[in-house]
Amino acid sequence: MLHAAWSTLEARGPFGLGLELARSVLTLPGLPILERARAHFTVGLASRLLGHAAEARVAYETAVAFAREVGNLQTVARFTKGFGVFHIEQGQMEEARACYEEALTLARELGDRPLEGNVLGNLGVFHGNQGRMEESRACYEQALALAREQGDRHLEGHVVGNLGVFHGRQGRREEVLACSEEALAIVRELGNRRREGSWLGNVGHRHFYAGRTEKARACFEGAIAIARETGERSFEGFTLLNLGAVHQREGRPDEARATYETALTLVREVGERQYEASAHWHLGQLDLEASRVNDARVSFEEALALSRGLGDRRVSAWPFADAALPSTAWVRPLLPSRC
Image (cartoon, rainbow, N blue to C red; front, side, top):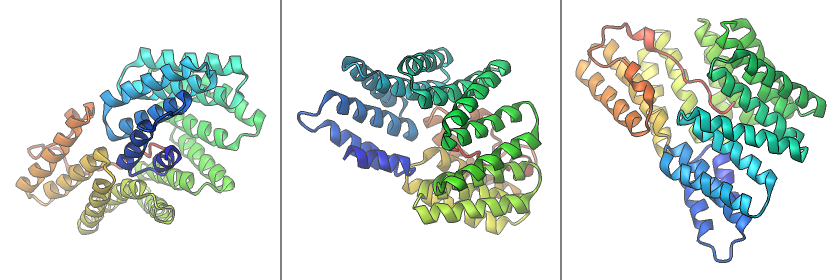
């Protein structure tokens, strides 16, 4: 049952089902402590993805505590790294740094080179988010060297992708696209269709912002085809939102609306409230373009309510129905989060 819960989360939903399965595991009598720790960690991950921050925190703390109790340091390191991701999303940077540094120390003590490289990649992201670009670059370079030393193409692709983010913060758009395309080539080589879909979406995002909407559309359509092939309904809905943004940017409001509405149905089904908010927001923009001010206000209010419920701090920057900004200034795709 725990394996089924984890598989559900790995396949990007439905997250509510993954959470239900993991909770069911915790009711089993005589569950070994380490398995109980893994179940709590799975509850934490599912709760985080569903936006249930309080439950996620308790579950992560419990998982780490149980792993420490049985002395399984490798599991402690892995869970602590996951807890660091939670802290990042909550804006708790000192807590995140402490988690990552503990995980890195344990990985080095255990001689777990793959985990060390993975944590270094996370630290690279962390330092970059904090504006410490030299520290960020150093972490990425160490992680990339470890990946290549071990012939770990999966980790190499992950780090190359994060290097793209690093270059983006420096305004080096061509390097960003080159990293994204290299990461895409690596996952294709590995035959990882899920990751291929993610990186296709990422490359599409880069083309979109460079004004190459035809290339962006081709990438998003390819990513949607892969999502349908692999049954990833959450990612399908997510990428449909991006395809809708292309239609909207290209001046095809009817196609954009149909695409956003299809996305809205999908993300509601899988409980992706963040993406549901985005769909309402984009539909509001279409209504605003068509001078349907009352309809636009309803959509924006739906988006705002959903986002506030998730603790999304970005909503203060959103235009609402009385905004004077031209709508095309706000048409933007979502950056794939699972690359």
